Length: 304
Image (cartoon, helix red, strand yellow):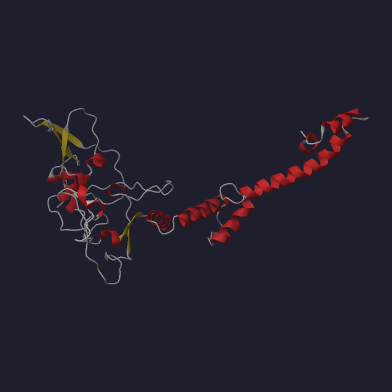
């Protein structure tokens, strides 16, 4: 196929076929067309070199130099491409909680949860300009007596919610703390950011099985559970501290902020012994039975 020759008027192509030997003009233009193809391929490769995913190997250090990233001299070439691509992803999300968690995990390999402390400051409604639907998360109009809100007093009706007080997942509002930030102390203020780390890794015990006892509740009202499931975690009924498993995925796109049941920390007793939405029972256990159940953990299984 010769694009230059195909663009000629048909009279010239007919005359070229009548020559002896035929196709002299076509062969001559094929040389120029070969040069044009090389230029076109070079331009196309230059376009691919603009992206770290498709650039050739020799371009990677130049892109990394433009970003100001550093890499070990003993590292393999494929790790250099991944490192530069990770740097680009972090720069695009610079200043977001997801990028902070991802960068911290890359540096420490520990469990991580970042919190903008200004979101936990007390936020009261202006009496002359009340906006009940924009009063924080959740909105005031959708709040119940068990819902922590940024304005008002702390609800004392939900032990599972109260167990989160002064933890990385504290949902309650606090007054500003103007003292300088220090390690180990949470200073709630407008410009402050808290990074919580779990240095201990979670280890799953794979060869044990909790003892489950299902008991009927007797006569129940419509809509109530007909059975109660009691779970003994330790086979001998000894006190055991339960922990969550770390479920952070640094390669997930778009990134997701870590939640309470995705960090390798101990599970509060109140979150397991109360049937509260703050305990998120749907994340703790799963039943294959078709009958309505109530899951309870005896207090005797928890260390005091």
